[in-house]
Image (cartoon, rainbow, N blue to C red):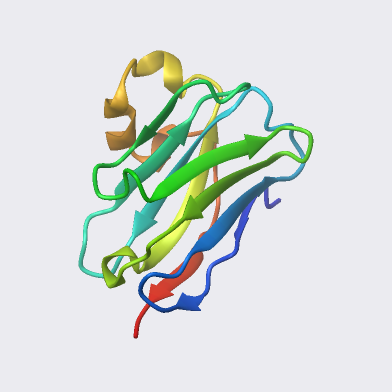
Amino acid sequence: QVQLVESGGDLVHPGDSLRLSCAASSFSLDYYAVTWFRQAPGKEREGVSYISGPDGRTVWYADSVKGRFTTSRDNVKDIAYLQMNRLTPDDTAVYFCAADKYIGDKFGDSRILGAGPERYEYRGQGTQVTVSS
């Protein structure tokens, strides 16, 4: 039973923007924190962004995307978003989201981005983002 589904990945040019979506099915995303991860071939998996639930008051970003990416959430639609601007080839990766109610309690700061997706209750399959000229 698929419970987190990502969408919005595409092939784009450097400097372009994309918005990824992470939709929850069969459960309400309200009280779940959501982290976006990315995995590129030959590179370590990276925690890209974190948003707390339910109000999104706490957000964290990896240094590599700070100032370019923005995470948000719509609890009515049970969707979390990752707005990606000024994309570069280094952003090419499979992006996937993970959700957990309690992950934020375990990490009080941006170290949460270093926690692997296996620590989350729900994980999606990912969407491919390719940035190429």
